[in-house]
Amino acid sequence: MTPADLDIARQSTLLARLPAPLQAKMMEGAQVQSFDIGQTVFLQDDPAVALFIVLDGWVKLYRVAPSGAEAVVSVMTRGRSFGEAVALRDMPYPVSAEAITPARLVRIDATRLRNLLQSDPVLATSMLASTYVHLQQLVEQVEHLKARSGVQRVAEFLLDLAAGDGACTVALPYNKTLIAGRLGMKPESLSRAFARLRQHGVRIEAAVAHIDDIEALREPAAEDPSKPWLR
View: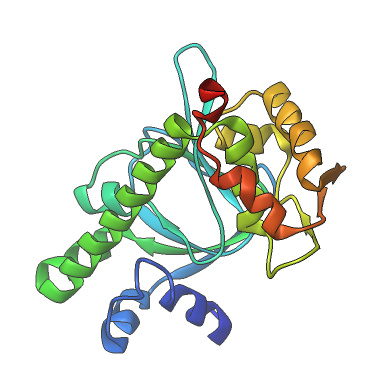
């Protein structure tokens, strides 16, 4: 593991609240694993033998319904961790994890972590804080799905990728089918949302979004979704 890898891991939700000595203790025995596009990290209902921190790339977490339909639960990138809650409880993974780009992950053994938690209350408190952050993120995700229109969700997604103000060009980090799944939309609904955002200065060319004005894009993202019904 390189010094740069350690820096990313230490800034993750999992470790950021820990003092340096406990960060070092957590990282003892941790391994860096590389995954190709489409490679499985773990499968739903597998024993939760490890938790992970993303160093590079993107990983999707998803569930498969009895009908075979896939529901994207979350998409993780650099500095994000996953698998903590079930690893702490020695339960099966409730989701599957798959690399959707080439990815590098830190793997932390779950049994070793549980032993550390039993001997160190500060570490245990930090892990509770980490799982609470994940719960907050899930609540926000549900709120976005319930209270935001499709156009708003797509606008917010693009704003999260953009940097600075004014005009910019951003690469879509993964394919449009997965973007639609992450945003709780069908692919055709995503295409319609992209089309509606043209009037706000957004043009999609292949896997790239050209944004004429970040401020103009913030307008549909902030609009009250009930506005059309009030006209």
